[in-house]
Image (tube, rainbow, N blue to C red; front, side, top):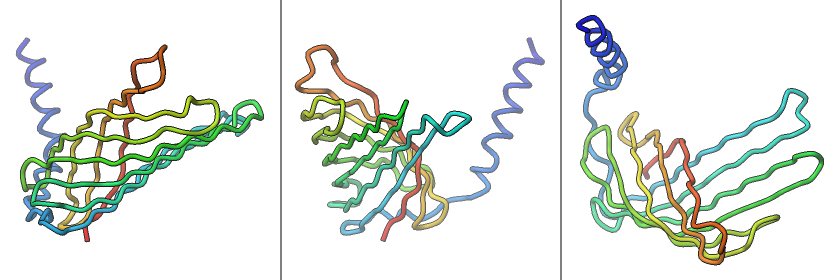
Length: 170
């Protein structure tokens, strides 16, 4: 029992030590500051016959030192068995950022529109949250999770949208 606890504690310290080594940064979040972020992913089979990729862009502005409004654009493309499939969503979001250090959690919500091939075009909205990790005073890595409620889909209550990417303030 003691060995297991020691192993877990040692593993946690080793994983968290690089984060602590970065130290603190001054919060770049000030009223009027803008933010741009991008995330992407892709997948293919071994012969590159079935391929898909997606990318997300976001442009935001801070209304206060903690409250940010943004516009987001997602694109998804898939070529599966010779059939092309394109989907997109455009959303407006509002997020409240907690804290001013290197790790900054945020919570908020979005509202927008989902469109494209093989999808019921419809309005979407829902809560979101995430975490920004500042690499320096203007550049950050982020992870974000969003739950989208689909307004016109009787068979489905919603979907999760998640991403990992990079961003910068200016």
